[in-house]
Image (cartoon, rainbow, N blue to C red):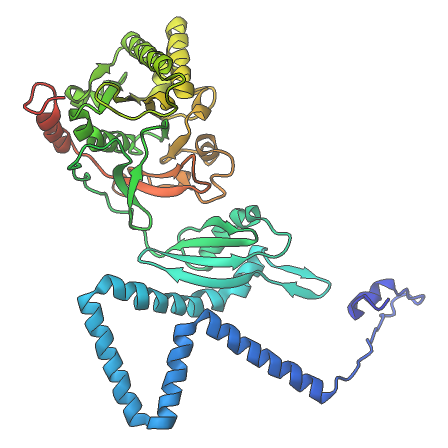
Length: 475
C-alpha cells in the first residue's frame, strides 16, 4: 500500500453511485524547514561542483574575474581583461591551429552545449520517445558533454538503464531535426554511453580535385579523398577485398581511378600489378595502357580471373609453412584486380558456362587471395543477392548513392542505415553527390562518410603520358 504513489489509489476505488465523481485527496506530510534548507543547500553545492567539473575553463574565468574585481578593483580587472584579449588575438594570428584546439573549439562547444543542446534537450528526447515516465517520475538520458571541431559536434550521452543503442539509431532523424542538423550518426563509446555526431556543415558538398600523385611508391593505404570531418581518407587495398555499390552516376569511377592514381608509383616500381576488367568498355578502357593486364570481352575476363587464381594457388603453395602474410616485392608484387560493373559478368551473363567460370574464380579469389597478395576491387549498380551472390565475401564495402533504403543494409550489412549510413538520401546532383559514399570497414563498427576525389579525363591523360606502357616511365 505504502509503495504506491498516491495518484494510483484512484484505480482501486469503486463508487456505488453512478455519475458521482471519485475525489481522492492524498495525505500531505509537512517537511521540517531545516530539512528543506539542507536539501536545497546540498543541491546548490553539488550543482556548482558539477558545473566546475564539466566546464573548468568557463568556471575559472568567472572566478578569476570576480576575485580580481573584489581585490584589485574594476579598473585593474578591465585592464587585465584587455591584456588577455590582446594575448589571445596574438596567439590566434601566430598559431591559429593550436588556438582553435585549446581555446576556439572548447568555447564553441560550451556555447553550443548551453544554447543548442542543453536548452532543447528535455523537449527533444521527450518528443523523440527516448525519455521515460514511470509511476509519476520522469527519467531522461543524461547529456554528458559536447566536443566540437571544424565540421561536426560530438555529443556524449549517457543512456537510461535498460536502453540500447538501436533505440537511438531508430530515432536519429528526430534528433537531427530537433537540434537543427542535417543528419545524426550514433556510435557506442562504451557500455551505456553513446556519441551523437551532428554535422554543422557539409564539407563534402563540393567536388574534390584529384589527389596529388604519391612521391614514393606505396601499396597503401591509398589517399583517395576526404572524410566528413575534413581529414584525408586513406583506403586500405592490400590485404582485403573491396565492393563498391552505387546507382548510375553515383561516382564509382572516382573511387576506382583514385585508387589507380595512388598505386601508379608502386606499379612503376614493380611492387603492384593492376589487372583491369571493363566489360562496359566505358570506364577503365580510357587508360588501358596503365594496366599490367586488361580485358573487356567476357571470355577474356574469365581467362584473366582464372590466371589470377593460378598465381594465387602457386603463391599459396610456396608460402605454406613459411609465412602467413604477403609482403609486396618485385618478385611477388601485390596484384589488384579492378572490375567495373561486376554484375555484367555474373548475373547478366547469358552464357551459363562462362558465368559459372567467372563466379567460381571470383569466389576463390575473395576467399583465399588476400593472404597471398591478390586483391579484388569490384564496382556494381545492383547489390541484390540474386545479382551478386558473393557480396558477403568482400570484407570492406562502400555504399554510394543507392535507389532504395533497403539496399543500404544489402551492401553494408544489417543495421548500417540505422547507424547513419543514409546512402539512399545522397543527392543525385553530380556536383553535390557524385563520389560521396559510406564506408563500412572490416575493422570498424560504424560507417564513415567519405567523398572520393574526381579524376578528370585530363588527369587520366596525364597519368597515361607519365606512367603508361610505351612512355619513358612505363610500367
